[in-house]
Every structure is written in structure tokens, then in C-alpha cells.
Image 1 (spheres, rainbow, N blue to C red):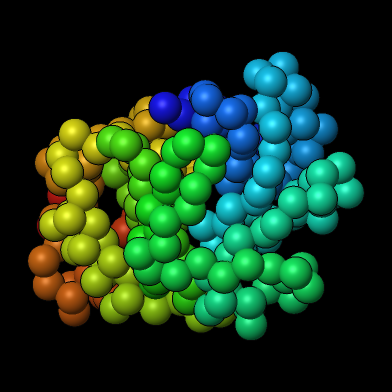
Image 2 (cartoon, rainbow, N blue to C red):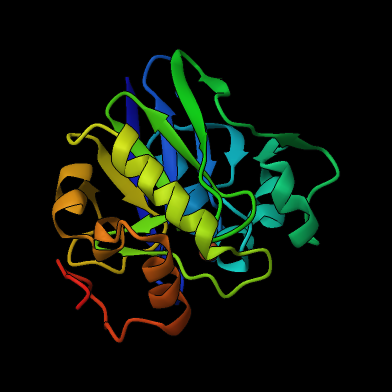
Length: 224
Ligand SMILES: [Fe+2]
């Protein structure tokens, strides 16, 4: 089993995660950013043994603590290869992530799903009935397509894929706390996330390019 600790940090409502394998205490830090001392303190309090850094993508607000964390613990950094060209700070010794990879964190298996669109090498991490979804999907929202390498058609395909493949009871843990809650389920998102309800790619791209006029915290919504 795995314990998951969600840390809200920084000025952009980021959510940083500690995934702690209960059998061995081996811990992955996902998207370390903003306040490395706070991350280290939480890890220490909970008895975590940090053994890797996993990145859902490499936008600044998700990776600005990587270097400082590496100063404290010499651990591998896992990132999708398509992120490297858009991340000048990629450590020299990075490890590639790919669709279908199974990462062994102590006795826990994490499955990698490629979900590009918000960024070129965006990924999600799935384990038991939970999934870390980065900025691909938020609670009643989804990531923007304004940064280099973003592609709204890819994001549409990634969201449709998650909608079809992820079981309704799966708990989703997003990269930002933009919603009425900081955690949700796929069932809740299928029912009320406007970006999952758009089944037409052109309409999705139009809404994503021109904004949608919503303000946080996001709740259930339907585009008109
Ligand atoms: Fe992002």
C-alpha cells in the first residue's frame, strides 16, 4: 500500500505530492516546487525515505524546487523525453518516462500514462485506485495551452483517453488546487467537468484557445 501526502505550496496553488510505500518507506516526490524546506520537513515527519523525483511535466511552477531538493538527496529525476527540450534546467542525469512504464517504488507499482497537450511530455501516474494527473485535468477544469509545446488537439485526445480508460471510482490528484475540493473522482469529473463533456475536438480547441470566462474555485459547469 501507499500513503499519499498532498502539500499545497507556493503562490499558484500548486499541489506537491509525497508517495510513500508503506512497506519500505521509499518515497517519490512529485513535482517538487516552491518550498523545499517544507517538503523536507513533511518527509521527515512522516518517515519518508526519498528515493526519486517524478515530474508530471516541467513548467516552472512544478520544477523550481528540483535543484534544491537534489542538494539534499542525490536521487534520480524521472521525466518524459519530450519535456527536455522545453526545460533548460533538465538535470544531466535524467531518467526517461514512457507510456506503459511500471515504476517500482518499494513494493508499490506506479504505471505511467502519457497525457500530452498542456505540455509536450505530460504524464500521469496511476497506482491502486488513485492517479496523479498533473495539469492535464483539474477539479472541474483542465490545463491551459499557452506554454511552448502545448497542443490543444493533443490535450483533447488525452482527456478523452482518461475519460474512457480510467475507472469512475479512481481518485484524481491534480497539480493545482483550483477546484472546490483538492481531490476528486473520475465519476465526479465525468459528470461535471466541462472539458470532459466536449466530445467535439474543434469545439474543445475553440474554448481552450479563447478562454472560458470561469473563475476559481471551479465547480461543475457546462459550456453553452
Ligand atoms: Fe503546467
